[in-house]
Length: 342
Image (tube, rainbow, N blue to C red; front, top):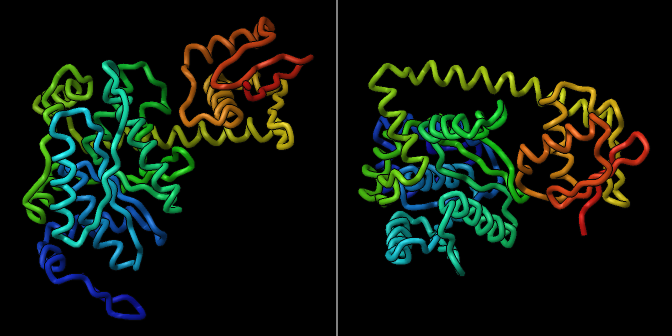
C-alpha cells in the first residue's frame, strides 16, 4: 500500500502500518476503501463485536489517508449487567490504537418486548443526536455480507415486498443522516480475522446464541442451508437482480410523485390528483408511503396493512378522512390532501 498522496507524505503510525503489511488485511482494506469513497467527516458506530472493531480499524486508516477527522461512538444500551464495564473496556482497547471514542448511554426504562428492534432504533437516535451536535452527516455501520443474507430471510418471513427484501443497502438515510455500510460486501470471517489480528480482542454478545431472537434463529437456518447446498454467490446474484428490479420501480414512483402531486411549502400540504391512484399497486403504495413520510416528518414508513386499507378505500371512493403517520388524509372533490396532524 502506498502511504503517499499526490501532495504530501501521509504519516500513518508505525503500529498501524505493521498491521496493514498483512496481505489479507491489505486486500480487505482496499475493498473497504473502494466501497466508502467519501471525503468528509464521519462517525463510526462501535459495539465491540468483531465487525465493528474491524470497521474501527479500517475507518481509522481511511481517515488518516484522506485527512478526515472521524468520531468513534460506543453505544451502551444498558440491557445487560456488565454493559457499562464492557463499553469502557472497548474504549480502552481502541485507545491503545490511537482511536479515541465516546460512550453514548441509553438511559431510562428499557422494553420487555421487541427488545432488539427498539434497541436498534434507540441506537440510531443516540448516534443521530450526537452527530447533529458535531455537524456530522455520515455514520458508518458494521453491517456485513452475512447481515445482508439474514435481513433477506427476516423480511421474507414477515411477508415483505420487493423493497423490504433488499432494504439493507450500502447507503440509506435516517434522521437526515447518511447511514453508510462499507463492509456490506465483506465476509464476517474476514472481519473476525481483522479483530483478532489487530486488537486481539472483540466482545462476544451472549444474545448471539439466544434463539428467542428471530435473527438468531435465521442465522442458524442459514448455516443449515449452507450445509445443504446454499450457494452464497448465486444468492448474492439474486439479491442484485432484485435490487435492479427495485430501481425500476423507484423510477416510476418518482415519476408518479412528480407528475401527480403538488406540494405547498407554505402550508406543508400535499395535493394528490386522480391519476396518482391509476398506477400499479406497488407504485401507488410506495408513492403514498413516501408522501406520508414527507408531510408527517416520520423516519419510518407506516404499517403496510393500514396504508393498503386507505388506498383501497380511496379507489372505491369510500374514504373521506383518515389519520396515519402523523398525517390527516382527506378527500376534497377529486383530490386527496395530506396535511400534518397537530
